[in-house]
Length: 106
Length: 123
Image (spheres, rainbow over the protein chains, first blue to last red):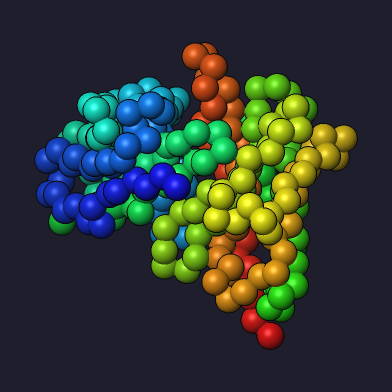
């Protein structure tokens, strides 16, 4: 079974850059998606296929992958970006989410 | 714009079968451009992929749940369903239905989600 590892929490000040990473062997062979989840809401797609921004997502959000690590970068962070972020990857018969990273905007 | 709504019992007894339906509005789900899937989230915890079904009828399940899960689709009703058998308290979670759409490059991603429904397993 695949595993994707994320840090439980990341903190940044408004206007700074947040980098949220996701690591796992499966990323060497499969694309990753990133989802944003705010309290009490369903997840929303932010980035797909490693680096493609979903329509309606601000340009401040970007994604990249190097080797077995994929990174979600949020530039010029706003307080409204405070949320949990999850990566997702894997084969069709074994999709796996990372454990999630709580982004706190101080 | 597709809209998804989960429905089903909010309380299930241990050892029984959890059954949920996802009703889709705003467009037809009968398309080779879609997978239909289920994801769950235990209270205060992360997301877990349960499984997906493709237009062709092919099903894909989380290996840890495979022996207990069945996902089916009824395109005539624009609905798809989840059945999880022999439930325990560990299956208490918010259950989300979601649709994976095909991108321009041919890959699929979950871009339509229901609001989620809490299912509690308790006697």
